[in-house]
Length: 130
Image 1 (tube, rainbow, N blue to C red):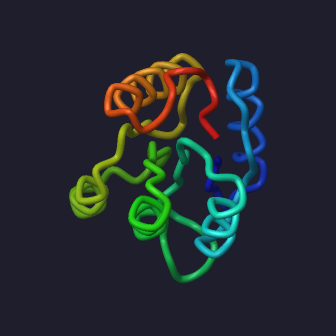
Image 2 (tube, one colour):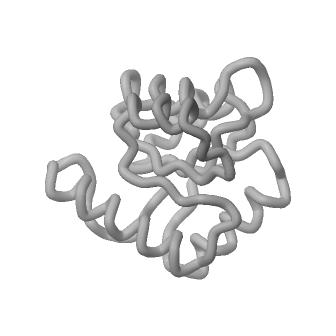
């Protein structure tokens, strides 16, 4: 699943993922949308922006998705300041890709994340990032 509040960026991520052979179960622009999508689709992974629509950011959304649905996140964000990265680290992400990203960067992050998750028995190592 993709959690991104900019519709054009989300569409670009979806197209990149589909070109790489991954299934995208949906796009959410806010924490409530992400939680609803997670409950309905049970994706194996969330691609998470840090700045989202509404009062809850992507870091707290990732924390909630992990605690309630055991869904891990790869962050896709332009925000890399020390405070933000400290908060990100506390959610134990399986990856971080700085925007603007390239398809090869995203592919490498996804492959590594799915290997990590597969070795932990959480998800198959097949392309289906969510």
